[in-house]
Length: 195
Image (cartoon, rainbow, N blue to C red):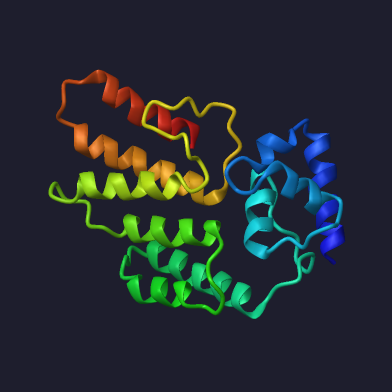
């Protein structure tokens, strides 16, 4: 099962002209991705989701062996998305359940947890800078060199990176909406256009 996923990642990456470095950047090492593609190591569902998303695909059903904690975290992510989509940001209990699902969290799972904790910080004047700092901190799990002036054009992004970049852009815009600093406004627009 995992071998099929590994071959699909490799074949799609090569077909799209994406290097090992580009695809693996921030989510795993180049050598680890090479081992995945050659079938030497098993890919977790969380890692598969990030790799496939960067390749412009969803993880095909039944292609990855899923652990009980992987399945539970996946279901909790669905519940969180449903709540946020309906305008309900009361997700702290779900985030704690996500955090406490079995094994320790991989850095992608930690990024999700920290990022969504930041997203639900109320977007009022007193909290905006804290929200921005926490979102950037979460994004740096997979984009360690990110700052507000980073050139993101052409960068392969995971779903969570897009969500966090969008929220960073909105937060920067809110912080500086009354500012005369056009550079900061440009940064906000630049981030949202890329994401």
